[in-house]
Image (cartoon, rainbow, N blue to C red; front, side, top):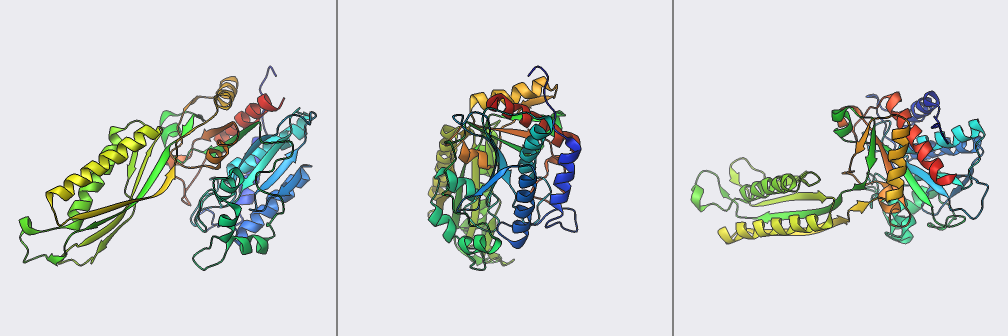
Length: 414
């Protein structure tokens, strides 16, 4: 098409605002935990809108929702869009749900304009992306792509001992379709529109983030063991202070993130000090380490450097013990070049300012990229804030991202 198509921005905004009332909080955010009654209500409304748009809805055994608009060529693989409906306990109105409703708006727009694509197009709502109630995170897309088994996911329980399998049945979304089965074969391409959840686009005053990939992640649980002793009677040079050693490791983690710029990340977000008494030298410190990079070689180099640093601490103090155990690994993700170029070309054709922005967070698109060509579209969010009731985005930016989504999808589906 010589001229880019546009979605109905006002309708998209109204759809997001109406859906945001389900689980809406007093501070303007949303609490819609996975497989809760509110999640069920959010799913019901989405399915209702899909059926209103003439889409064929199917639900798989992990609760993923697929809404399909058929094409004219049954031999063509489906072109898919999607994200998630569940939120963090103090989430916002746009994380996840924007990608689902932008996909729905693409299909509504095609209906409005009477455009029939050769390839079928689907919009997907993946189950439990957030992982705030059940783990593993990105559960629906993970089961769909074979990252872990359906049985493992269904057996997962929340803090109250309630199982995924039972909660799916309770809200009416324990489907019968086997995960990973797509009519006509696996996706020909998958696109996910999302708020950036970071400050880069806003800082550069640009509208569209073209996402070449997502950072790999390695998470560790670290336990530093020293020796508890009296804060007043133990001279400084005779101490085996676990918190002092832990503090040095924290500084090292931060330094690693800076050293592997621009995509290196190093974070300690959780710490527990024992015995946590103001006049006792800490004997044990437990904390998390989160390192991220776009290249797996960099991740391994960061890990090796950190281990060498820890070995040096233990050599300097024979009574100091440090145990570091890896608990999570997500490999770096590089999205499909053709999908990336489709997003970039659509932004250019629409006259929208854009730049490459690597995702520092996990998304369902990362798992989908293991089985199909995939790409992402970012739009700015105010102050880079997400996973927060203050999360915000402008109607204009959200519409722009959906314009790009529409035209990228049409390039692959026409």
